[in-house]
Image (cartoon, rainbow, N blue to C red; front, side, top):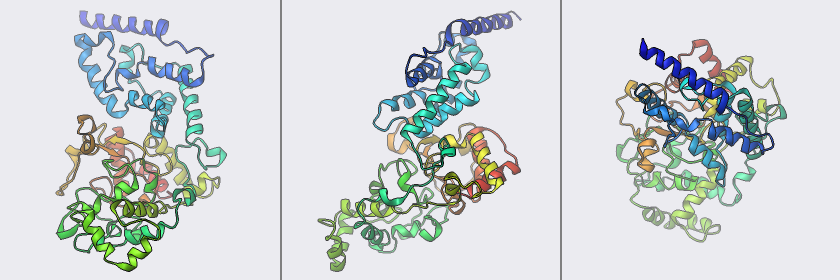
Amino acid sequence: MKKTLVFVFLAIAIVTCTILFVNRTPKKELPLQEQALEVLSKGGCTVCHSQTPDFPWYHSMPTMKKMIEESANEGVRAFDMDAALSQLDSQDGMSLPNVLRIEMIAENGAMPPKHFSILNWKAKLTKKEASIVQDWGKKYRRNIYPNGNASKFKDEPISAIPDVAHLAPDYNKVPLGEALFNDTRLSLDNSLSCASCHLLDKYGVDNEQLSDGVNDAIGTVNAPTVLNSVFNFVQFWDGRAATLAEQAAGPPVNPVEMASESFGQIVAKLIADKNFTDKFCKVYPEVSQETITDAIEHYERTLITPDGAFDTYLKGDENAISNEAKAGYKAFKERNCAGCHCGVNVGGLSYEYLGLKNDYFADRKTDAVIDDKGHFSVTSLPYDLHRFKVPGLRNVAHTWPYFHDGTKNTLEEAVEDMAWYQEGIEISEEETAKIVSFLKTL
């Protein structure tokens, strides 16, 4: 009883401090971004949302330590505020997913958890502070991430796919890249090409859990679609390629994919073909790994799918999608899906953990050998284990099976799993159907 009373009095004291001393609105004379940064940096977000958490003084108290450290571990997995704020000083600015999630948190008041806001006097935002953060986020997005949406949809998290013209500056390279994309000589035994796993008549995939390689080898991750991949911030599930050219250099010499011994071996086969060499060297000075992959990149930049139903809707035609799809899009945003699946490709702009709220890997059932390491494969940092590049959702109705392991065969399964493992909720069949209806418009 004594301990309970002590805890209650402590909580009351902390809340009083919060009201009197901490939640003070920044001076309105400051520029909007400085006001927002003051709210975010002094509002206690880094108590949890940081790889180097700024624990409050009462963290050392026996009754608090475990709870605060568990909250911090969960918080940084969900969102690293330090990393997000540091992006403001970078050339590219804060990523769209990070801006959106900061906006969403300010709008819905989801953070901090109730138990934590009682204990952490710096955590709870006032309505005015939340308004400052939301206003900054919208203004920042309009300036840094302008889109081709109709004016009434300018602030939507998803952008219509733009025209292809600016994506491939040298159209002399495109036909060469297309030929190489379909050329089986990039593989050891001349049996596979890039198009073997990325079939354009199947929306850039092969609809297999794992793809077949040379000599009966089997891949270890599901082959993502090549369509609209130009809009991804990195390539591959683990993000090991920064550009499409770097991505194109991987499969030809991967032992479980095309299995060539080296690009030198590939070049030797290609230059033996005089007709190919004559055409190629009218555009490039030589046949090499760099020129081969550059040509493939130029071709893949043209593989976009504009003017789908949802794009038509975003451009102002509200009759382009059904009422059920509109309800599904609303649910998609309310369930925080748009915090990761945003932008032109409805994803592909960040790394995220798979299994934030529930343990995906403990529950999964598959006999296949899967590479589950995610971005850890690139960094070797424990923090990056099970963090994957968020897949884009364009044409997702056609690109089954789903997830990096290819274990989900229907959109319904994928939606329900995302709700459970990422948000910790079970959604109804009705809500699932609405979200699926929306996804089919992409």
